[in-house]
Image (cartoon, rainbow, N blue to C red; front, top):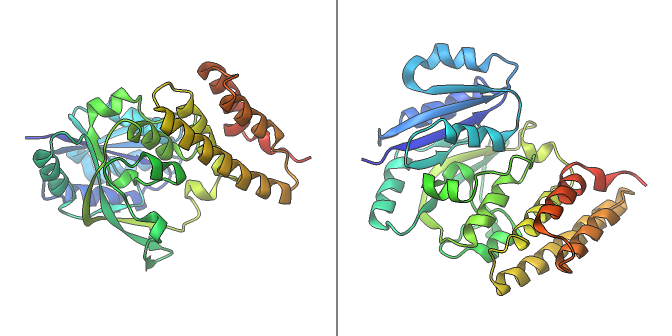
Length: 298
């Protein structure tokens, strides 16, 4: 029997997260453990969930560290050979785990998979645009353009998660894009062509509403994977083309807002001219791309 560790990170969503929890507890496949990581909530989430669910799940409380750290901590506190993630504002359909476990039993060489999903935006169902259609197999190239994998739909082996070091705790957003780039450069992604998840969006507490110029985080990930030494020459060329295109878009927006992106342009050029080592890039990239210093007003 395959034991799946299900990780739900949450922050100040003590009532909303209950729908996510219930969707796990109602799975037809019962071989799972559920770990909820309360990432520094100030609304008494841990106390509320302890009272509501008692011994049905494990609650881990941390200081406010962000979703990447919360997911990583949840994995470290779990025991299953397989890992699944669920965002606190999404819900699984009852057969989600059952169908994915069956998929991997039939295709043991595939170490990670996702499913199709239903999108709800501001209370209304919307259809994904063509660019959001999920690919499968070797999806590294389409994954450069935008995030092609939904964390809430993923199941993967613990070994694979540990091999790639989990989520980058330095990234306040686009942390999923970052991990999927690293994984898809080396591994095929399975896809169940079934709607086994409902994703809810459009609310004010989403990360995408909190941070400006999100492409700077994606550029950071692109530069990081370029310098990793893990890519083929063809993959590196595709990364460079994508990063420079995202830089152009970022610069157009910054100019309209009278913001200075020269430091960002400089670090991109340094990386692709091979004048920065991986470790030096991490130091400069975190300062210029992740900590807003590239976007100071002129």
